[in-house]
Length: 128
Image (cartoon, rainbow, N blue to C red; front, side):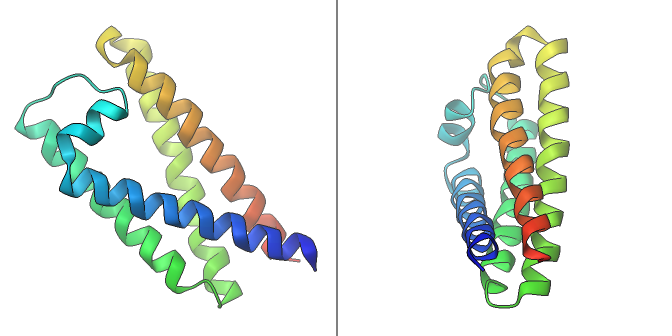
């Protein structure tokens, strides 16, 4: 089925992006935060960025490992889409409430929202 294969590829692409983002947040925290639109931050901000990076790296790696198990791929894709939606909402609200975070908020809504929609679509199509 072409749609299910496309959905599988979308899920794998999102997972690969999650691994890249997570690795960047863990290993090159300051440049990763700058690219994502965040202003300079203190040690607490860096620690939270590394925490989120570890989450993304782990979820992305698990999803890639499950690429040949449709049920597991589907479950991990839904988990990722849910986290992406939560990230989009959280960053959007932060950007609305704090002008220093406006750029990061806009980027978070666009990237997190897009990943959430694509992941939800892939999750739905993998059922078929």
